[in-house]
Length: 321
Image (cartoon, rainbow, N blue to C red; front, side, top):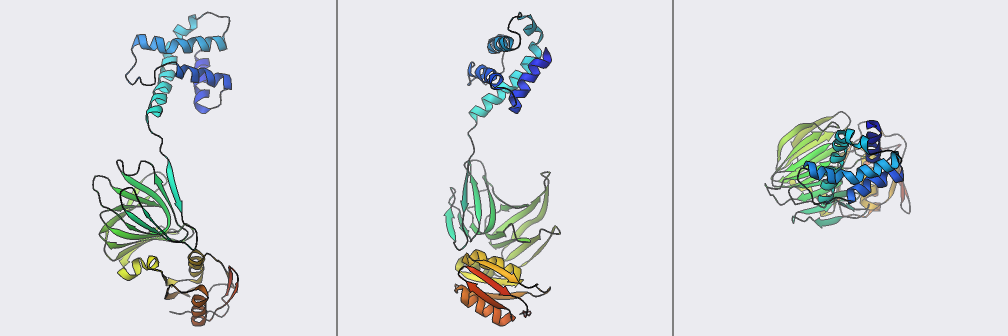
């Protein structure tokens, strides 16, 4: 008998029960006051569970007496009260929704958060903002590249989740580059400081930097799970949102990805890329054909453009550094 009762509730919890079985439990929920928040006394339990008792009895044993219900009361209370509490709590808690802002390739966007913080999103970036943002805490998820100017509030900490990294603001403006396809995640601070932790799948945290300060940059390598902390000039931290396209010790594969995001084109590399070939150069809001002219002349590579499709031939490419 106990197993029948237990099975009914377990099936309801897992969503495997028949429509009739699920309706019995749902109707039972509807027959008590959702506003009841205090522990149930004996009389209240009797009132609460008697409609359920009758419905279970009618379904499982339509021609038998209700004697078994008294023997099963402990099991029913243990399972049913838990469901009732969950039902009440879920009804009283507001549903958290998420606003997802995606910036397509070839576009940049400035947004203002509910706390008046400002975010400049680079091409191909995405940010997810929960509906309870700025209630008790400020936490957002992010991929791509963005420059953050955060309003510091010690009572409502600001945290940014980017891949495995969690970045906590300590009153600052900073840049984060965390495209999923890139091999690295970088965090560069223009003013103030940030703390960076690495989160594991098990929910554990490892502090990578307790405080990254002005003109410092942390680079996390996804492949070998290592990181470095070094200096960076303020001019390079947010060059992209001043419309400066900059390649800093970049491979042609990295250059191709950046060109695709910046100009909304498709770039194909023809021929194997030689190891050790890295390139450092910047452009001020130049059209893509000018960028490709300069890159290929300096590197020895060649290119072809067919509308939005670009092929870069690496056969004769040499190191520009």
